[in-house]
Image (cartoon, rainbow, N blue to C red; front, side, top):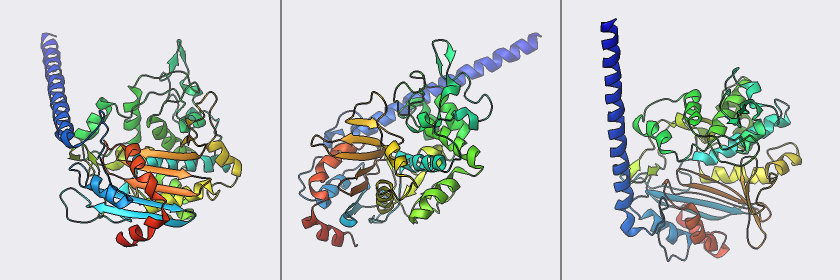
Length: 407
């Protein structure tokens, strides 16, 4: 028994040493990341975590060139259409900060969470087809007990009350894993690890919940990891095959691929976390929350189909997608997988951003669509948009921009 106790004590000591090593390594990473972020602070006017490049440019190309010249950004891609006519097609910079390979408008980039739009659209299509109901409990399509004990409010386990609708709209009560340093750390330190969906969901389980299902909107990628499993269980097909058959193939999105299972890696715009190129990390870390590569042109193709009733069979489905939940701010809210905004002059626009510096904006009434990638997680996407917005729809700019980008 003494030998067993001694062995247990020895194991415990080793575990404590391992924990200390993890803590030391984590602290070193924090210091390294911080050093990298502050390294370019002298040339960047930024809030914490937001990279803004000052530009006096008077065209999309000149502004994009200023951003691409920054040491933390390799390349910038922007593509826009109005009434099916390209108004901007600009690509500046290179695929990596070290390469001499120039980007073009059709260079692939990772969608990050912009890809949630594909998941949301697939879910709504499956609901139209009667594969499941939006108000079905998600637990109905997950292994028995999978959600048990996760969302406990006032002593009651509400986990099995979470519906598919609430997952799509980020109103499940699950906490926000996005931006959580400790959840991101395993990804950073294990670049070649192939992540199983269950492992991603386990990372989400350690985040405190925010309330009972249906009570408030709290954005979290964990919702979409769960949706990926729901889709697979309900269709008995891999998630990526379902999205391809329902969305990509019908729309002719031939330049969009699920990055873990479909993509044949070639030249693409690498994405950066501060000064670190992490685009070679295994993309399985994203799964159904945005694990795609695409082009700006393919995103615009998707957006036009979405708002012009070319994805769903019933007009009511799109209206349901952009409907405000009860009690939401009518000027800014999350619908069923898409952010909906009202401008000061009363225009509605839809958008979704992606962590790897991607933004996709749709103005349905004006039939305007713009997609761009800065491929930098710390880039201020809204700040960039405010700089280019006065020029992106300008027909006087379009011919020169399109010519210069080789279109």
